[in-house]
Length: 176
Image (cartoon, rainbow, N blue to C red; front, top):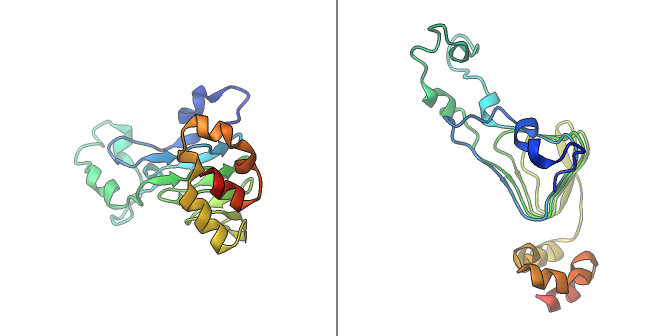
């Protein structure tokens, strides 16, 4: 779910920045994840190669400057795939940096800059984003990750919406 008055069709162009095929990184977004308006995913293509004397991206301007360009230089600086788990809520204008994993059930506050991983069922915010609190205790988080309701068939989810929306872990266990 992506909240934008213009509709979801422009999501990749508007919200996924510096994603170049030659780098090979992926943006993976789980099921039942809510992305508020103007969330941005900065991909590994935003990183400049830093082991030469200049960080300037000469190769993107052609005019012969692309000669000798080695895509492997970018891949070596790649921080990996950016992964957003299932049932995650990312607030308006948050920015997620390359190679970050946001765990299942996590919440990212509006205008946060996520530079490191967010644990499952954590609430994170700020610049850089840090854990503000946990949504549930360790046992409940473990149970939720084990139940993984988001992977159920749609019919089962529909039958058990009260347990999924509620706060009774035993009711959700019984539904599983």
